[in-house]
Length: 307
Image (cartoon, rainbow, N blue to C red; front, side, top):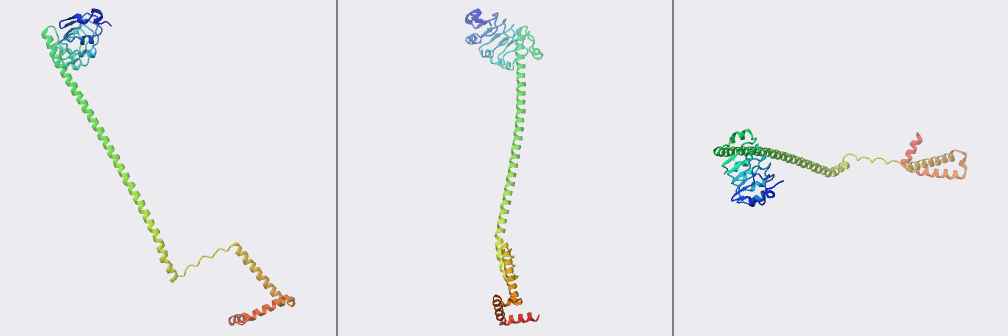
């Protein structure tokens, strides 16, 4: 891309007083750094070049008072073009501009403006009007500034409206969040109260059970004397006979049967003459005589003999 420095030497060589003419230099880019080094160049002519855009740092050339950008290919100006606050004369003839940046309203010193031969937005084109003489170009600058100030005000109001909407939405979100947090706190509070009540009931139940356990020994102690003085005490349940006890009883019964059988044999049968039976019969007779000496037993024996 061609720059002025590569075609016409140093920019200082082109500086004439406070005017710097870079027109017809076949420029595709603006030599911003070189121009920033020439603060005396308050009048800059960049007309009849191939400029399609201006870099954002071009707006740092705040020393410019008169700027000619006519007959280029500019489709838009930088968003912060309004930083060129000292600009009084601006020629934008025959470019490809449709709109102007809102910051254009900040060019409060602008006195002359030409926007002819641009595909301007119909509203902007009507506001700008023609620039066929000095008077019309001054009117164009004044009207366009007023229009851009109105656009800026509208955009500011719209921005404020959006901010207000966003603030209202944020307030609603915050209120909703606070309501949700309050509801959650209420739920936690209720759950805590329910848990406390449940523990209290468990504690009361344990205390009641403990009191019941303490009362039982007292009741038993109070009931024990009654059983002695009043009703008969309950008989202890009979012990279960073990197998060995049953066997012992059976053996004793067999022994008694044997003794009784032997005694009968010695008293009734022919064996009573035998020495053994003689001894058995003597023992039996002595036992019977001994028992008859007691009156009760004698009465029993008499009754038994009568029967």
